[in-house]
Amino acid sequence: MDLRAVRGDITQVDVDVVVNAANPGLLGGGGVDGAIHAAGGPSILAECRAVKERLPGGRLPRGQAVATTAGRLPARWVVHTAGPIWSASRDLSEVLRSCYVESLRVADGLGARTVAFPAISAGIYGWPLSDAARQAVIAVRSASVEHVQEVRFVLFSDEALAAFEAALTG
Ligand code: ADP
Image 1 (spheres, rainbow, N blue to C red):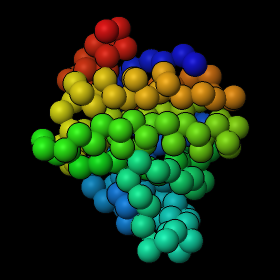
Image 2 (image 1 turned 60 degrees about the vertical axis):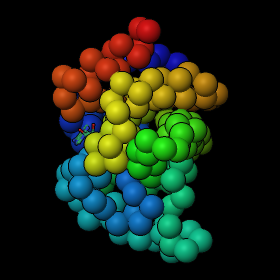
Image 3 (image 1 turned 45 degrees about the vertical axis):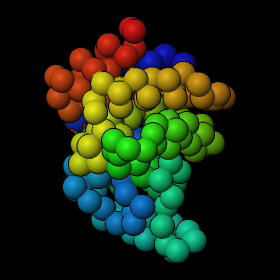
């Protein structure tokens, strides 16, 4: 797998799978989740509702991932994962790494060759950026895939891009 970091808007990238930093309720939210639903249109939310009905308690456990199609996005699918909320007192890094590993597993099962990730948990969920980047890179490098050839971290700020570039070279 080729790993790279770029600055950009993940709703605009031409890849097979865009990963959404969603929440367990799966019905949209702020940040990148809101941007994906706004740009992709209502079909993504309709599919999320259908997926939600099949999940125990109607909730996606943090660290797991599910797929929908991508509506009007250039991507073919959106893989929705719910990241952990940052905690200073509990080490939830395994849950964060699981978001990347499980998203890649779902994407690979769809036959995706290119996958774009945002900085999961590093926005509203408050995860410190440099560690969020470090966990992301460790997790992606640990994943075994059959089809995925390129993982692109699509970062929304220069600061996030710098953190991922450091994690990739460090
Ligand atoms: P979380 O709730 O998992 O923290 P957020 O959406 O709040 O998710 O933030 C995750 C990261 O996504 C943040 O670094 C935020 O700046 C970034 N982000 C927000 N909008 C976009 C976008 N359109 N493309 C890529 N990244 C985005």
